[in-house]
Amino acid sequence: MRRLEPAAITGVMSREVANFRTFWKATTFSSVLEPIIYLVAFGVGLGSTIVDRVDGLEYVEFVGTGMVATAVIFSSALPAMFGTFVKYKFQNTYDAILAAPVDVEELVTAEMLWIGIRSGFYGCFPLLVAMAFGLDPAPGMLVVPLFCFVTALGFAAFGIAVAGTVSKIDQFSYVTTLFVTPLFLVAGTFFPIDGLPEGLQAAAQLNPLHHLVELVRHASFGFEATDLIRIAVLIAFATALWRVAVSRMTARLID
Amino acid sequence: MAACSSGWRLELVPAIELQGVVKRFGPITAVNGLDLEVPRGICLGLLGPNGAGKSTTMRLLTGQAIADEGVLRVLGHELPAEAKAARAEMGVVPQLDNLDIDVSVEDNLAVYARLYRVADVHAAVERTLDIARLRGRRRDAVDKLSGGMRRRLLLARGLVHEPDLMLLDEPTVGLDPQIRTELWSLIGGLRSRGTTILMSTHYIEEAERLADEVAVMAQGRIIARGRPADLVARHAGRETAEVYAPPERLIEIRAAAEAQGLRVRPAGPAVAIVGAERARDGAVPPDAGRRAASLEDVFVLLTGEEAE
Image (cartoon, rainbow over all chains, first blue to last red; front, side, top):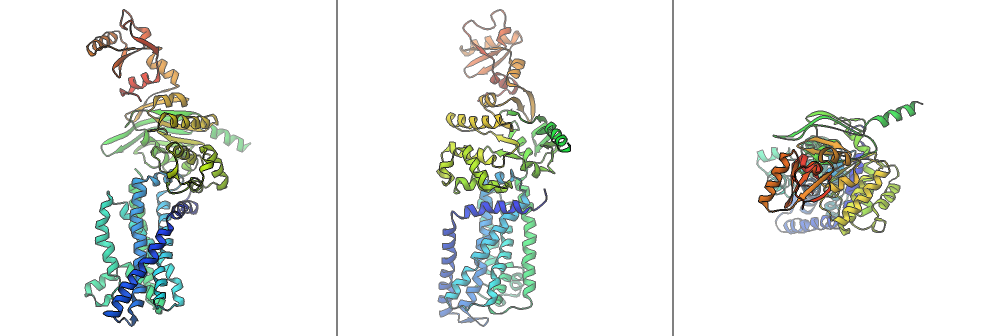
């Protein structure tokens, strides 16, 4: 049997779909409500009192487009970390799947793809909510789900790799504090990164989330030539983390 | 003719062949030079105390553990290289319940039908619902089922692709006697249909009831193997005498029996003198209870562990 069989990958994804059908309402509820809360607090609150325009955009447009990245990281890295850990440590789900003709590489790939698809979908919700707050629709926005999908693949792989590395669920606190929160804050979501010190500006170029923020803004207000490089960075990030995740999970699941 | 010939050759290939298999976890050797051959169509009970290496052996057979040494073949597939192909033809019932508890009974089965590449998922679900006797609960979430129903579902899930080989890892561990009997009847049904079964257990009664052959495992290797009756005759003779007496008296009785070359084992508050039919000169007190020797006697004598 060959590597990365579509039947194995779709089989694992069908398990995720079956489970998702039992909790999609809660996920959808928070995916819709969270951007509304953020946009009211930052976009309308901050935008109407302190900040007027940022980078030539209304603050609500700036935050609304930037929040896509927030939605993507929180709907990919965190579910991947916690979900993976719970499935292998507490539910023994992966023992059952790996007793079928599925290998670790297929399992990790399927988990990444499912999270990527979900984030590709839910990542667009802030954009839709921002439209209700005054953001004008643009044809470029049609490719935003694809940008979200590719970015979420990388962060899903990051979460899976972390889950395959830590020994206790409490250790996720280190990861969220040291990696997830800084990545999300220094992505250009709530303020432009060109106001940051030069070192942080350079660091932001290594932040995949920053590239997603820029891509979404450009999709909404006009693409730039450098966007191809940003897409390449996101693909490279997803590919590299995919291999790390497969390696970490193989070490964890195969004795 | 060629197809017949290759089919005939396939029948000759044992379902499981392990030669000199070693698996270490750091300083611990869980499987230590294991040789095991399971012919097709039989139910082999892998009987051993906790820590004997049974579960590690099961994981080696599914490719979820990689042997440090030795040769492993399952249904003609060399492991670990062809583990995936081997898994496609075998079903596994794990020791721990790993069903998706929020998902319905039928969706649990359908997911695994897809994982096993079953062509007609719907038919497979219908068939396995009948095996699990859960047709009336098909749309219920698993967490609404009783413990026995969940175990039946777990077994049915392993059968969703009609495998040639079933690996049952302690299939009734921790279950109450009624549920255990239910499971035994399902496993008995499989056995009568000719499915090859390798069943690890530490329940003597389970092995006696279900297994055509029993392999006793201790410290990572097989220390005895045969049909239950043959093992009893070979290792425990015909008769066992159980003596209940104060501890000091039991010490004397043990010494007298061992002086005659008889084997004595503890049996709760009593001692059991195995091979009592060979006892002479009052080595077995007249008030001792006599019974036919059992697989439990063999197990305790060979492993030094109390049986369950």
